[in-house]
Amino acid sequence: MTPTRLFSAPDSTADSYRPNLPYGEMCAIHQPNLFPRLATLAKLYVADYWIVLDDVQFARRDYQHRTRLAPPEAPEQTKWLSIATHLPHGRATSIRGARLADPARCPRRVAQLLADHYRHSTHWPAFKRRLKPLLDEFEKTDRLADVTELSTRLLLEEVGWEGQILHSSDLLARGERSQRLADLAWLTGATTYLCGTGGMRYLDPAAFRVHSIEVLPFQTPLSGIWTSARELSAVHALMLSGPHALRRAITDLQARLVVGLGESRLRHWAPVP
Image 1: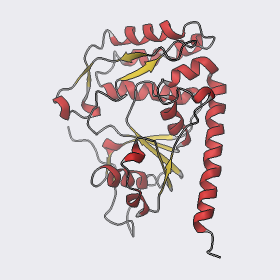
Image 2: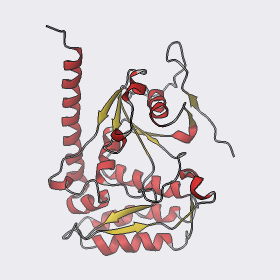
Image 3: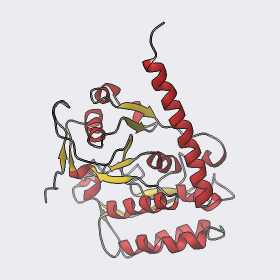
């Protein structure tokens, strides 16, 4: 079935249509991940819009159907939590086309592995209750993206995110990679695109400058709660610190990012002496 296209990005931004969305300065575009890493969660939290990149090719070596867990006392002892995934069209299958290979077994495995690692945390009982809608989702759908997006939304809700979610499969944008990402960001009215360390290796900022969008590299600190932010699921930090402390850590990072962005723009627009 062909997806409904809600909005389209034009050949030129002049005299063109943009959807009437609430104002949001920052946009992040990221695939739906299973219980995403803390670095990914923080990037999405900082954004006013998360565009779920669900119509690109599924990648088994990525985090779309798996995440790393570790005991709180031994973060170096990582273990994969994976969801068995069926690709109806082989390697060409898109993320939204990927299906659960064993829906009946998946919720038991997810619940068991999380409990094995974090049941001794004081924050586990509350989080276990929050997991129920996610575990129930396995009985409602065989779409992997439905489950993984919900796992991300669950964590965003834990830290009080107030942004909005759109889906790339509902949007019409041009070209590939940088051009398409720039068009998608433009549709939200964003002035800033948050780009992780992986994206910065291939992204072409020129595609964003056409839309007057600034590409802002998003990096997390390397110490404290952030030590394993690029490796372990954000569930790990949540179980160590609790939702309130985790939200404070992310909002502190957000504040520093906003200050740095403001200083960067001041330098950019400063008159030449």
